Each structure stands twice: as C-alpha cells, then as structure tokens.
View 1 (cartoon, rainbow, N blue to C red):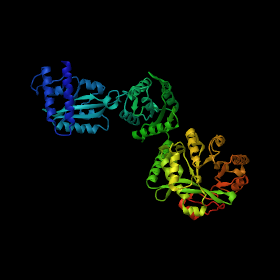
View 2 (view 1 turned 30 degrees about the horizontal axis):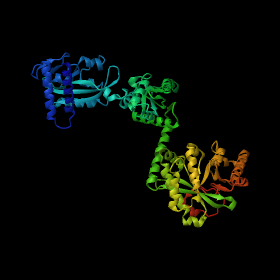
View 3 (view 1 turned 135 degrees about the horizontal axis):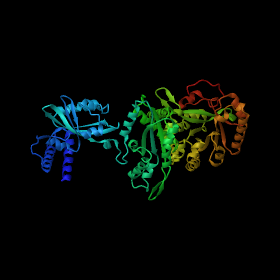
View 4 (view 1 turned 135 degrees about the vertical axis):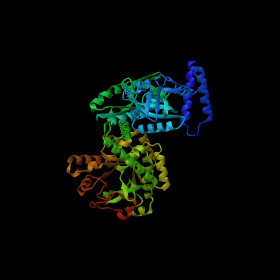
Length: 613
C-alpha cells in the first residue's frame, strides 16, 4: 500500500506543477486526472470523504484534506496569511534552513533569500494568494550553515476566516540546479554563485578562481581506452574529489574543473595545486593499457569588494587557460593584464582580416631590390602585405599576422596577396619600366609551408596570370621549415621542379642557419638586418658578414643584404662583395600603384625622408 500511496503522491505533485506553470487555461483532462488521483488517495488512507474537512497538522498548520494530499505530510510545510503577513513553518523547515532563527512573517523570511530573489518572491506570493489555484516559485535560500540552496515552493491558495493566504511545501532542488548530472560535482551555476559570494565577502579577503583543464581528455575519451565520454569524466572527478572539497568543486564543459579558494600568495597556491599536479601526472589504468593526462592550471586572483564582476572573472580564467594551452601543458599560469591586451589585439586583428577579405582590403606593397653591380638596376620587388584599416588607415603586419596564423586566415590573405603580386609580373606598364626579367619575392608562412596544397595552389595562380614561374622567388624562414621539416622539404623540392626559386629569409637570426644552407633546396640567401646594424663600427660583425658572403658565393647562392639604411653601411657591404641590396636607402615599401610614379628602373641611394609607409 505504501508504494501505491507514494505513486499517487508523485502523480499529484507532477500534475500540480504542470497546472501551476501552464501558460494557457487549465487542461480539463489534467484536472480530471488530478481529481481522480485525489479520490484514490482518499480511499487508500480511509480519510473522510468531505474535501473541506479540516483538521490540524502535527505542526499546528490547518490543512484541508485536498491540501494534505497535495502537500504529503512528510514534506516541509508552510502556511502564510496575507492580511497580517503571518508565517507558520513546520519544525522540519526551521531545522533545515533557519538554524533556530524563526521568521514570523513572509517579509522576514524573504531576508534569507538571495537579494535578487527577495522582491520577486514576495510579489509572486501576493499574486498567488489573490488567485485561486496552484503555483510554483523557485528561489535561492540561505540555510543554517550559510550555504545557498535552490528551493521550489509549491503552493495552493486559500481564503479562510483570516483572509487570503497560501499553504505550500518546500522541495530542495539544489542538486537539480547546482549539480552536474554526470560527475555529481557542482555546475557552472554554482560556480557563479560561489564567485558572487566571494566578491561580497565582508572581510575583504583575497580569493582566486582556479581552473584545471585536461587538454587531451577529449581525444582520450574517443579512444579505445574508454567506452564513452562519461566514463572518463567520472574517473577524473573521482580523482579530484580525493584532494579537493567536493561541495565546492565545479565540473565545467570540456573536461575543465574549477574551484574558488582563498588566495594569499603564489607559494601558498603552489602548495594547494601541487598534490593535484602529482595525481594528474600519474597514469590511468584502463583495460586496454595505461594513459596519461595532459593538463593546464589557470589562476585568477581577485579581491572581495572589487568592481570586477563574475562574468569578467570567468573570461579571465578562460583567457589564462587558452594562453597556457598554447605555451605548453603543466605548471600554474596566472592571469595578467598583458594577456587581456594580447587578446584585445588578437580580436582586433581578426576583425581587420575579416573586413579586408570581405572588402578587397588586402593591399600589395612593394620594396625594390637593387643590384649595385649593375649600377642600381631594380632586379626584383618584395611583395609585402598590408591591410586597409578604415577609409585611410593602413594596418602593418604586427597588427594582424599573429591573428592570421592562429585562426588559419593566413591562407586566404596570402592567396589574395599572391594574386595581386603575380599580376604585377605581367603588367605591361611594369614590364615597360623594369624589363622582362624582374622578379617578385613572396613570403610564405609556416602554415603555408606545411600545406599539402601549396604547390598546386601556387601553380594555379601562376597559370591564371600566364606568368613565368622562374620570375617567382618564395621567401621562407628557418623557423617555418622547422615546424614540419619533412613536409616543408617536400613542398620546396616540388616548387623548384616547376622553376620557382627559394630564398632563405632572415638568415642569421636563428641558431642552425649554417646547417640549413646544406640541407635546404635554396637559390638565394637574404641576410638579416641585425647583421647589418652598426656593421661599420663593429669589426666582429664585419668578419662574419665577409665570411657569409664568401660562403654563399662558393655555394652559388645569390645574396641580398636587407636593412641597409645609411651610406656608410652601403659602402661597407659593397666593399665586402655584396651585389644586391634591399633597404630604405633606396626606397621604403610603397603601394604597388605608386611604384611607377615614384621609381625609375635604376635607383641611386637617397637621403631618408619621413613617410607614412
């Protein structure tokens, strides 16, 4: 019989909730079902058949038979008279939520609610008392231990001798609202509440938002070691709760876990996190073998009473984790304003790129490369990327290159730049001014160099313009090659098979450049401007430069000296045997459409003039 009673009580509650929250007029079928359940429960309990029969409840709250069936006596019960704001609570309610402090009115009781819920609950209670029927109210209640609980009030209105009022029950739905259903840990809503409480700490203490993200867990959950994602989530949660307080440990999406803790200094934080690092550094045993977790830890310290809000703290820890994931796993990474500034620049850089791609804003700037052995004849142009920034502004590479590479948009940008640069090779006006053999130098990023479609895309664009591939010189850097050396080497060899020449840019800025001279298929070496700076005043640099030029000549490489800005430097490198020069002493980078109006086929060294380019 007890099971039947419980089933009927469950149905009555479910139907009552549906009727209370219905957005349309009451469903007659549901009302009829509710009435039937009530009749059946009456028969089972052998209660009087008159629904208005009233008898006192154990806590002194007068309830009709229908109210008793709705509330079920074992629940936490309350009774409120609207006229005199008198509130009566069952002893269980007082014991669970009020720590022997007994509120005498609804107004007093609402002071235990979350500040954002107080006015709303009072208003809804008055509305429910004035309207016959069932209602449901959800709110956050501070319990006797000072912790927030999510509760649901199910009420039925009444109009007795004392006036209108409500009788209802309270159900604790904290697990429903504040718990992750897979791990049983707190969820994102609980984290927001904990952060809000910490920010309002009356002792003005310092706290920290700590987030631990397992960066390889998603891949592991899809491997043969685990049957599903839930299995791995549960394993990790079980490990963490052995070291951290389960009631305050938060499970976030993407195998991330958070905690709000007191913050004293970085040494204290390291002692808190150290056991977690040791545990996560141990392998997990699975039926198919051992697996290791890779993780990053982000920490955002903050002061109670500060003007920062919860959403800002959440953004800051996500930013810290994102930066930590890019720099390497392990260790503790702290938020800083520098990260925020970098994120702002990256966001602005991406928007610049998106706008440029959508509105033909990828600009091709050219800087000439001059042959001093031929009296200053322009033998090549390096195509340099700029982006239009607004109507008049020009964005330099530093404002967008990092964002272009991190988002993969570098491929689209380069396609547009290459397309415009190749057009210059077949432009009749350029051919008339600079001859049939001048070369276009185009830079390749590390992402392009490891792209399997690089060669096909390059030849497609060359064929589109009818250009001679032997007049195309692709510039690469040592770091770009080292990112994926096998793929890079394969692409470079294929490009040279089509007649495209390869230049090693920024030679001398890396650590193993000399070995690359032997291993890479190269045609040209561009010596980095850091070798050139103060060359005439530093004997050791002059010895190195002389040796490099001589070595490249022996290896049959063309040599271009970059960054020549002063007459004394130009004379020094020419005395060393340099043949091709690129630098401000001849011309600064300029828009391709300005070249014909500003440059002759033969250039002489010029005094540096201020320019917006």
